[in-house]
Length: 263
Image 1: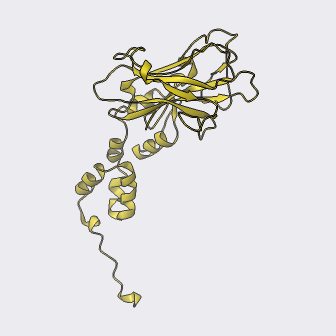
Image 2: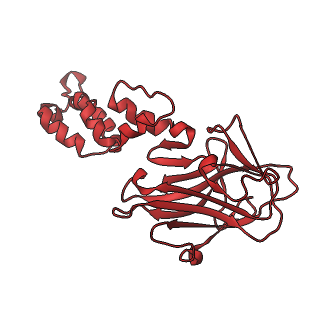
Image 3: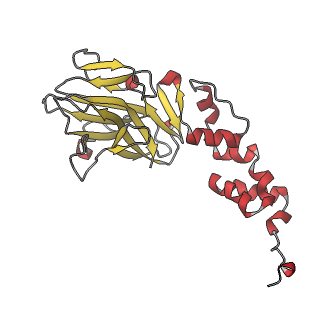
């Protein structure tokens, strides 16, 4: 074929009005907005507009920014969107960590049985933790860790998993082999209501089935405690709980937090 006779295909999208391009991109997703620039250079101007990317941000994005422990400065809404997606931020003085509408409850904000007993638990800083303190179980014969979050802080109509984020001390005399976990809406379900829904959770990876821990990208381990749906109209607290009451001594558990993350 003679290259001099080649005619490039017409870019029909380029001939559309700016308003029409805006309507097309605003009804897509953030991924499609980025891809639209590759599809047609006529989309480039519209696909960079703040008004487009404001629609992809959570409705309460300004509240999230205001609660950030450190200043969050972005020149465009697109930059802000990817900043929140790729680099989670600390909220409320480091009590919460957020990104992609996922939240981690810091150890000090968890309800931990006997956490004020210095012979059972110790509190201290770790260089690999995002929080100022982590909880370290020295030795105890009961374990009960509970994290709660208000549904208004979560994305509506979204299925969530809850995870315990932790590490285990290698050379430890006492090991926690398994525990139970549960999820409940505090305003609508009692602890008795959720007894039949308890899950078996393995903290050391000794099993090949059930809820077993997985390595995270940040170097910590996580194990799923359960899941729930943040349905519209259900307001109040969601509780994720890990407990083990067999009265055998256990230790070597380092708690980084409880994370609520979209499935």
